[in-house]
Image 1 (spheres, one colour):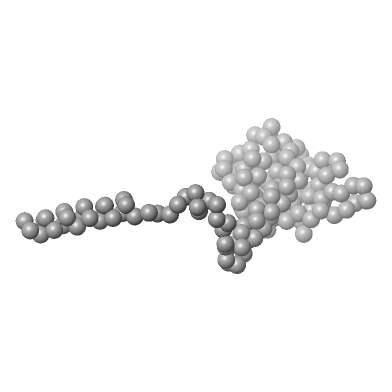
Image 2 (image 1 turned 45 degrees about the horizontal axis):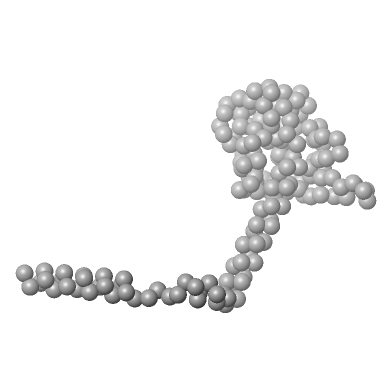
Length: 164
């Protein structure tokens, strides 16, 4: 009984101590400028660089033209690799003729446009063969710039994508 009384007294004392101990003045903390270390600054710079690279990657993804699957079959049957005639990302077994697809420039694998866009936003390689997805924008003239995909018949006029 004495032991139980001591445990209860200790618990109450601990609770009172935790509730009454000041945790700092929030107004004072908000007014004090943060004095970060060099390591904090390096982490912030690295995060900003990652954000910049991610934004650049998203812009590059938009350079890959989306075309109807039927046109891909007509124009690129010889060069395009159909991995089991389905999208290897969403695992649908077949493409419909009117579905919007994208052909990766480096390896010519075909995926649903939405599937490959989401994939390339988090990864920089083909989901089938793991080739790294890169795009190089080359100036064509002083007034026009475009990216190029060599031998890709699916590119819209004036814009194309090129692997490096």
